[in-house]
Length: 429
Image 1 (cartoon, helix red, strand yellow):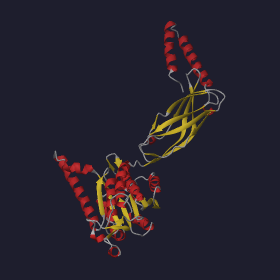
Image 2 (image 1 turned 90 degrees about the horizontal axis):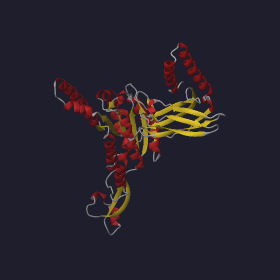
Image 3 (image 1 turned 120 degrees about the vertical axis):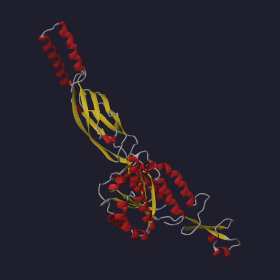
Image 4 (image 1 turned 180 degrees about the horizontal axis):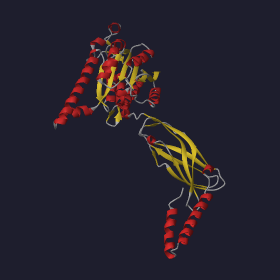
């Protein structure tokens, strides 16, 4: 390649031609510039005298910055001056990926490129481009060197900010704060003296008969229960609410619920799929839950096919038939739910506590409220009809014993977490 200095030299030749306006002058100047460029190119060091090794880069959340580092060494007997471009696919969000190099023989350096990935999944690169400038700076050799690298981009997990407040509520339910939960369907914790205001149903009459005081039982929420999260990756999950796919919003809700349930001591199972099962994890608990779920979700993408709920329910049965809280993260689209999911809900609710969590599009309500002209009125009527169909589907599910949560994308994780805590407090898991 040639640099900007070559056009400048050619422009300087215009002045020479004006002093001696002859054809031979033009040919002489062109030949001189060409000879200088050729000599500079021959004197430029070869790009293959560089050794490039990429340092491993750990996982990063979508939208968060990270850095990829290249260790560059000059293995040749001559100095090296030029530039290096660390090329990544556009969704990796490479910033400042062009680096100037000046290395003596045997010298080395490290260059860092900032990545701000915009999509989940494994973002990859396999090479870098190097330019070696000649001593006059007129021409450069350009070559490609192998430097493979991968950055695993995890789901963003925006709802993580709500986790501390929900954990505080969980600690209250779990008896680690001043609050004690008493009632049916929870595990026995301890005995203490009755005080005014206690539920009389908590009195332990046998223990009271052996004591001088009336004694009540205290309870704590049940632990080591199963929570099964089923993520729909079918065509309805490909729809976007705002700029975010429904699938990504559902993942955010799943991660918050899993983090909360893991802290509560419950076991987490996970199934994702559409016409086939795409991913599953079984029996995760404790600190390993979030890492396992995020790693499983990384490569999941919506598939433009109808979801086979029979396959997903079959995979759910394969994880175990013990009673569990089953959370179905699927858009509440009437045709898809009523034709695919509804026929299987009866047997499912007979064995498990079932919750359907859906991402609602707030644009529907906005369109339904706009009636400024005839066109807007027709659109409002269509939106009202769509909302009525969704409400009807939700009522059908509720009549079969399903808890339906239909919320905006930013509210669904919080509402789902609060619903889990409510079920936990009432001993319904």
